Length: 119
Image 1 (cartoon, helix red, strand yellow):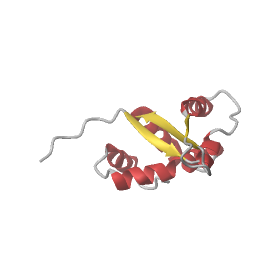
Image 2 (image 1 turned 90 degrees about the vertical axis):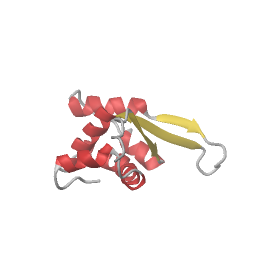
Image 3 (image 1 turned 120 degrees about the vertical axis):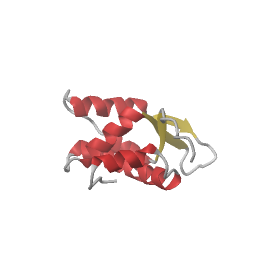
């Protein structure tokens, strides 16, 4: 039996422009959702990609396990502005991770959340 995989420190999400736009919408207020949203906005990285003239930039965000867990929890909440933004920004990337790395602890985390994750 293989040794348990070490806890992941950071998960990188490659974002498309629509996902970046969803995350970068203006956040009004000073509550927990807004603070977390601003934290995510500040972590988006933009890189030049001159190899593709139609899409000259690449976007990504690196999330800690804590941030990823928080995104997953918020994505499960009922429809709301912030929750919808998170779904739009991360659902595609989460699906890719589940397919690419089925042994990743993310699946265990989703199982502990119970039925109905919106990913």
